Length: 349
Image (cartoon, rainbow, N blue to C red; front, top):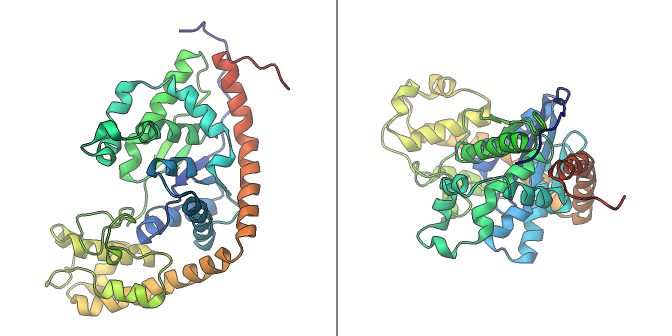
């Protein structure tokens, strides 16, 4: 495609984590246990951590503009309330750093249609009327690749449903490096899939993932729920008539029980085995009040801090602007080198 270059491999990179969450409102317990709680743990390891409100991705849902701005600030407030420290992590919204969109176009010219046609999330979200879906929804994984590679991120905390997109990111990195004779320029980021409750299920159906799009608000615990709402939702969560088993193997065919045990384990920083060592043989009438008490103790302070932060939108905007400036410092030279590699002419300083 192009003449080979003699670029040497870059020096070893620091461990740099990147992840993004769509600001679509109603952050819930599944988001917290499956993502944000882990973000905080990674931050506290002393790694370089970059966390983004991916508002460009949110445009694929055609949100009301005012709702999108509100949801972006709400997500920033939730991140901080959950323990992300703007002094330790870079927190910003995607649209403030143009490298995301610019690099996505370059990667559009590297990625292949066949690769995108294999993306199962597009098929799931587009449904039967695929021809009416937006190009943005189809191209979502390429923008995700740009989000990650704009910072030369080495690790990405992802759920199982995003692993395929991360594999595409790795494919794009490899093909770019090969096409433009720059071995090692873009890293092949590794997935980070950890935790005992990385996939939190609906409180009304243990076979479905907890989702903000579920029409039943009783299916999820929102981080904006107060103590009474949290306790009520756990009390009414679907279960079966059998007592809790003594071993994890006994949860195999009991999705609702497995879900509640997993939630307890994650909130208590325990393993499911430890939870069952305490509650095995006891019925849900004993277990649910303890789970509700634990959930309120963990989530009520987050709720209170979110409300406090939301009352000062100017301060949230300041935090996001500062984070965007720090993100730009990392992304700008990577984008500039990328443009040079592909042959884009630069005539301005």
